[in-house]
Length: 202
Ligand code: GRF
Image 1 (cartoon, rainbow, N blue to C red):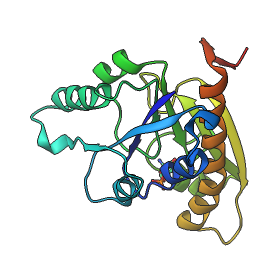
Image 2: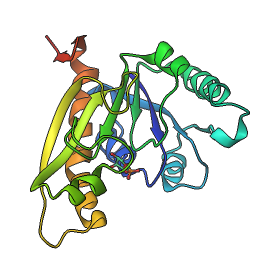
Image 3: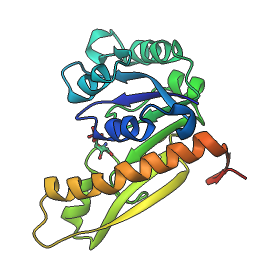
Image 4: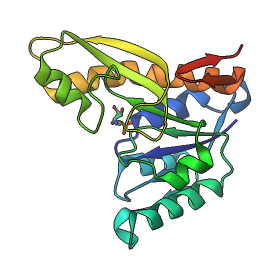
């Protein structure tokens, strides 16, 4: 399978995929063909360039309207003909053209146990709420915010001394291996989405 990975930050989830694929995309079942971002000064793009991958940047502020940004991101992604789009810490809500083009083939990772704590501050919100366990969710993207069908989740205990950064780092340890495992399984075994249920490899 051909993967396009979208990033907005440090790109450690991207790095986990790069490390897992290594020099054997056939064995993993997928290879990353390009990395896209919504900003240009991020480590995620440096990781892509170090891996010799094509990259593209679509910044909202470079476009007159959100719809024009949506169109640009869709066209830039479509140019690489992905089988799966992996949103790994991509911090923009994907637009309707992108969803129309790639819907059902966009996997997102979120650092909380959805449906709890959706949105851009899932770790902070969980901590503030005083939960004893949180975690991460890998799901298909639908037209809501972090609301699509759940593929897998991982649990992380909250510790008394945790601040947002410490907890997020512990979540990312689980999140990276969960994302690698899920993307590999989807790529190797195929999948079917029925309503909110995801059937992998049946
Ligand atoms: C991940 O925890 C992701 O779920 C969240 O932001 C983080 C991105 O980390 N949206 P990285 O850029 O993959 O290191």
